[in-house]
Length: 436
Ligand code: SF4
Image (cartoon, rainbow, N blue to C red; front, side):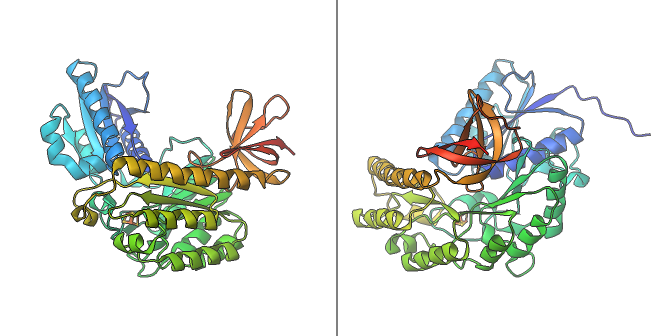
């Protein structure tokens, strides 16, 4: 007869960085609970005696945040408040030996693909049967679905392939199984994430298979919204747009990081696309999927970026009228190709350019939002906060995009349900509305 292990250790997992890291933490939680551990996620009030920090190593700011978190918990360990401290994730993958020397209070560091080793350290098995059974830490009605790991592109500024390796697609059947399990547990919206979505299938099936995957996921009962994050623009597979236009479950939303819009900078970044090609692609996207919300990110302050390069970027943003724009300042990362160049744009100028770009976008966002007044949108409600129920339309992803606020004094909605909302007011990042 099989007996249950009585575990005395309680584990708290702290996740830093992006949604891909969050999915890794969710998989780790699932495995640990499958091994009879009590696991909390990001709880301050926990009496956990073991802490696992899942770190980010993307850019300087992110690295610093991860290091601060490790140092803070190393101090807790020294003070006897926790017994064991483990560190995993991107920072640990990239700087393992440095970290081992600099912060030796940590009991062990693990790389991004070393979950089985981390589990073994905790006397737990890696349970293959739990594949697809991921326990989510997001709100119960939405979840991220990581369709691949790593990236096989070679953008000059990017350290991600150093930390996550080359692109590895997960099989369609495995992803459909996971989506079914999520739907069974009440998930209605899934965000497809990967370092680079459009490459999906090239490694595993020798052809781009994102359209096939999208159709298979759209067939899963209970999933009403599927949203695409992080599509690389070079050689963009246009068939994705046919599926998007065809299937109501695929949100008319695309997160397509463009990074820049000046040809010399795009070439130096090795982005495999020019300004004109980008313009043509965006035109095709908007033509095939009318009304689509395009979210993008730009990187300012890349080595050699001149005033005229930056002007070209601003002009492009004004011309293209994106629904959402995020901006990063260039971070000089060792072992990337760009590290050989001189990091010659002063930090203060990088910050000014980032600010300037966001101000330009803010005006565009206000106008775009004001154009929604009077229209009715299907809205998914995430939470109640103060006097408002707060939701999102299909054009808004959680955490990063607009929210729709509906006055709780005059409207009632159930959290996790969809409801039609007429927009009555708009600001740069919020919409106000009435339930219909
Ligand atoms: S496509 Fe994205 S993740 Fe891949 S190398 Fe380029 S910036 Fe990095």
